[in-house]
Length: 239
Image 1 (cartoon, rainbow, N blue to C red):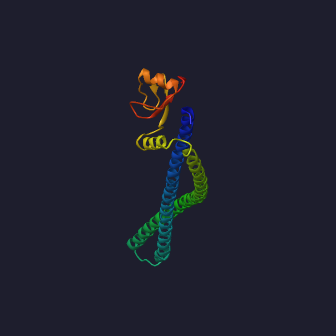
Image 2: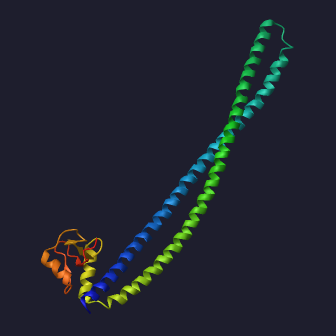
């Protein structure tokens, strides 16, 4: 196999490996997205539970005040009826004071009931809004799970295809060269086979000696960058 052909095959293998790495990164991100949505659901659920608890507390407060009002009604009627039975002005004034105090207390309790009713109405609307958000978030979560499962299947299918294609190409290249390429992939970040443009290795972005650059232009041998050990080839000096 000519040098140019060896490089072509090696570059095709590198393209496959680059895509393979991208797929693996995408697959690693999928569970994170699902976990984030699940976390948002859990937060919303806790907010709903808190709102429902607040609503129940408001309803209980209203029931309690209404019971107190019911208990005060007989006391108020009894005090009013006693006005017709008193025999002294002092006692009459005392009962009037008691009636006024009861009126004031009843008024306060009634205002409390009205306040509770208003807060209950607001809280019920909040609960209804949260419930709609919960249902929408659940649908979004379920749809995302289905989409993610479908995407994983697609990526796994592509990985299988890439693996088969890589195996075929690996049989077409010198095995010592392939071992060298695989070893570099383990130790280096990014691409292993890179062009040299205007004396500069595009892997480490450092210059190479002029003589080596001339050798690359002739293309009669495989070269390695003296700085980063990547496999290099002449890039035609086109940026």
